[in-house]
Image 1 (tube, helix red, strand yellow):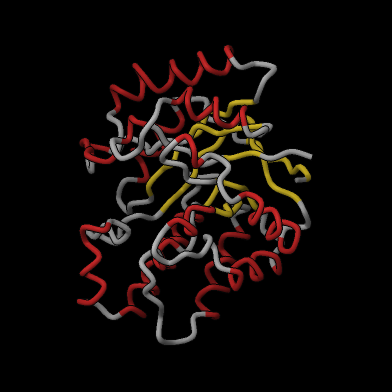
Image 2 (cartoon, one colour; image 1 turned 180 degrees about the vertical axis):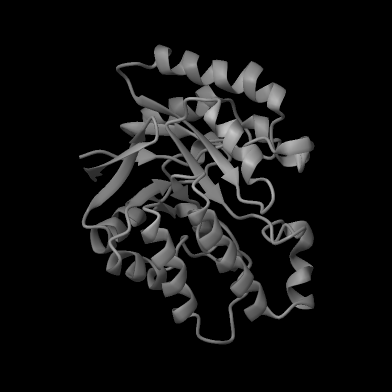
Length: 266
């Protein structure tokens, strides 16, 4: 039996606190078996650079620190070399080349933008009132399906992030969800249970139990992540998540090594 937190950030993304080692130390202190370091990826032309590290920081700081910590904490905890990627249509070739140049254990694929709208950014939450919420959800799940099909990622991150501020569709989305996660299954991508939703205005884990039941129906593998932006959030609310893993994931989570997936009991 083991527990792994595969979604963590650090100071390099400019909106999280703490060094990579402080996240690792907290994981050791709370008894995790494995931690994935998965800060936000650089993007081409320094796009969105105010909330992510640059390519230069990735190569000169992030990669060396991950490698150093893997050696320093060998025997105490397994440290995985990861990244949270952004799915943005039009950047696929750049992202493919960037990912191929490093020996990642896994790459999370997340949708944070719908075209030029950072829909999960509190600064732009008013735009929800300017658009049809059903259209927002429809486009979001279109992007989730595309992120699964593009071949760039191993894990779908916070797969219903669009609910972050509590906005809900006014029409039934079951068919859309089934079609989306059929594609996730087709491309053999894992989906994370992300506990950070409990710390956001929606006060609900990502994904909802409705989606977890669909994932279970399609036997889609699960990973576990806190989306920690402070060291103290590593492993936070995993007691709740473990219950969902037992109910919807056959008591198993996926772990990765050099982008190869295996399952372990929690």
